[in-house]
Length: 79
Image 1 (spheres, rainbow, N blue to C red):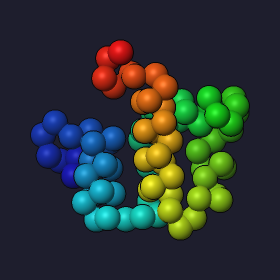
Image 2: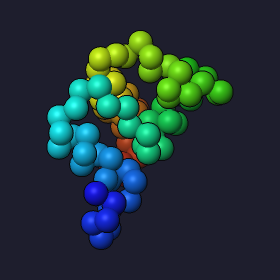
Image 3: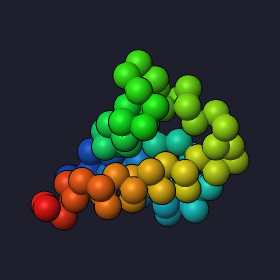
C-alpha cells in the first residue's frame, strides 16, 4: 500500500486494517493513539504492553481510544 503515491505508513496501515476488516490488528503508526496511551496509562507505558488485554479486538479498542481522544481534544477537527 505504501507504494501508492501519497500514502505513508499510517494511511497504508489504515487502508489494510479497515479494508480487510481485521478486528485484531494493532495499529503501529498512529501517533495520536500513542499519545492517548500516555494520557490514560502514564509515561513509559507502550501500546503493545497495555493492549494485551484487548485481544481479540485490538482494532476496535484502538479506534475507540482514538475517538475518545478526538472528543476530548478536537485535534483532528481543529478545535
